[in-house]
Image (cartoon, rainbow, N blue to C red):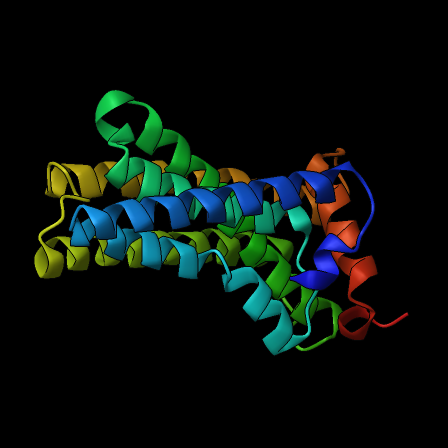
Length: 218
C-alpha cells in the first residue's frame, strides 16, 4: 500500500483521499456501533475495513503492480456495497444503487480476467484465438458475481442480514446485470487484441504491462 502512495500524479492523491476517508468513516461507525451495542453494524464495519486491503495484500503476495484505478474501484465497491448499502440503507433510498455497483464491478472483473489470461498469452503459456480470451474474461467476471451472490446468501442465512432483498428475484437480476457488464468488458478485450479502436482500457492495459516487467519482460 505504501508504495502506491509514493507515486506522483492526481490519481494517486485521489486514491489517498478515498482510502483514508473510507477508513476514517468505518472506524467512526465502528465506535458508534460499540457505544450503542449495534453488533451487526460493527461486524459490517470490520468486514468492510478488512476487504479494503485485498488489492494491497494481493500485490505483496504475488509481486504484481495492479493499476491504481482498480484498487480505487475495489475499495469504493466494497464500501458502497457493504457499508453504504447495508448500514446506510442506500439500496432502499436509491433504486439504481445496486444496478450501478453490479455493472461497474462486472466490467472491472471482466477486465481483470482478461489481464490474467493476457499475461499467460504473452508468456506463451497459452495459445488461443482472441475470441477465447474474451470468453474467459466473461466467464471470470460471472464467476466472481456468482461468488458474491453466495456471499450475500451466507450473510443473510448466518447473520440474519437482508443483502438479497427479494431473494431469488434479486439474485437473478444481479446476475443478469453482471452478464451485461462482463460482456462489455470482454468485448473491449477482444477489440484490443484485434487492434481495433482506442479505449481507456488500452491505456490501463499498456500501463499494466509497463509496470510489471517481470511478467512481460523488457
